[in-house]
View: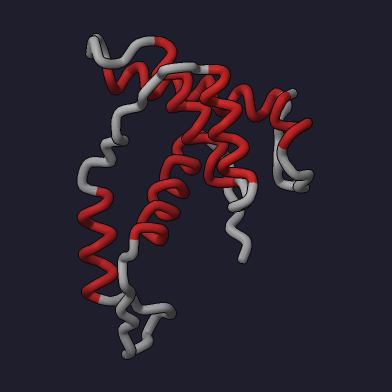
Length: 138
């Protein structure tokens, strides 16, 4: 309810049961991944899941507001840096080696793996893990 009242109104924002289900799926996956690690308590698992599911879909202006809401709901909870394993180094490697946009194309487009680009790819990966369908617009 806080998000729907404080954040901008966007058609792709969803605070209903689908969003709750996505957060629960993400929390369950994270709980299985971290096991009995004492650094991960329930608050950290839920906060990480809420952030991973919601942050990628927010506009730039809404992100600070959302972070404020979550810091009020989870006071003093510090999240460890997400471990994406080989994903981030692989993104860098593919960007520097180049990408062919269409099948049969001879030209290879090299990309610069800046932090915001790499972060968006990691966020897209996280979204695919918890959702049945994802649409990229823009």
